[in-house]
Image: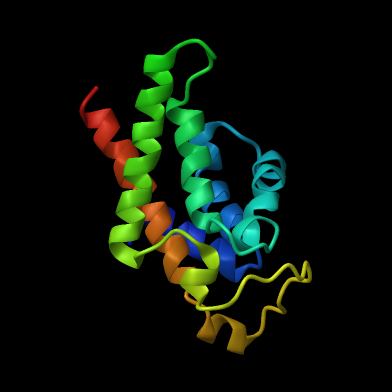
Length: 152
């Protein structure tokens, strides 16, 4: 685990959701203040508002990639395709470690539209894989950024 992974996992232990934990770990590098980073990522926890869809840690990787390498022109199809290739590559790396990017599959639970977050107890942290998933997502995106910087 690198420093981003450690920071992201600490953020989770401090009570932030999965997306916030990863995104906030990169806020300094992205030039985003703490409050903006946490608010932007707040909707993606629990697989997007606790809908148990795409894992929040994965969503955070995608947001980080968008801020670092995203496109802005709606007509630049090459840039759009290049970015989508990047996102699919990040998803593939996460899937290689965890087989899926879907929150409910990672947690082994059914879809749950209950909006009430689970209490963060010792049992919660012991039974959830989230901290490891967060650490892995932070590692994947940080290594991706390092590789991009080496190749440019």
